Image (cartoon, helix red, strand yellow):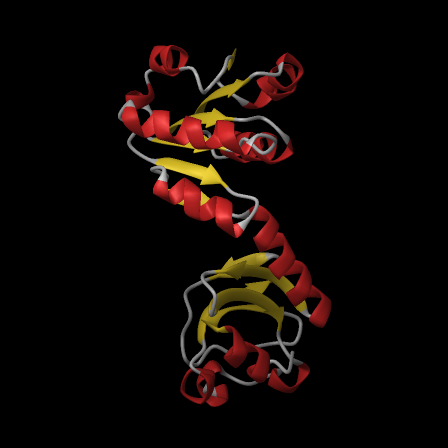
Length: 215
């Protein structure tokens, strides 16, 4: 269990709070909007109304005591920048910030963010990939070239083993797991036999994955 300072409770911030709550982390949520605070109360350990660009307010939260600080301010980029800078100045161990555009990502990193998440870019990538094939079940972009995808096992692979398919040598793709009836098995062995009723979790270069699965 980790302690998380979550600043910004818009749609994205609220969903992060809900997921952190599912994972049983301790969450202190901060927003200027009282209505957003009230909506987030079921999912957070504590919530405060306050201005994250106010150094004294941030100081009162004890930012050094949190394992991670997440800044998800989406409606005022200047406030996001100032918040990130203040968090690092006050000794925050790790700061993750949200960006809406590539230029914002660059400024946040220069301003002290340890990591930047780009939900709009991720969503755009997912939609583009998803629209190309109805057989893609999940998509996670690792960088500009590599990704993790979960796909339905192709019909022509039905009954064949992983070693028989030899996709690692042929395409440079690694099999991470196989999902059968909703249960993910990541104990992958070369003699594992696949079924068209399963889905397969793979990682590799996107172009190689597209070629292998005819996307």
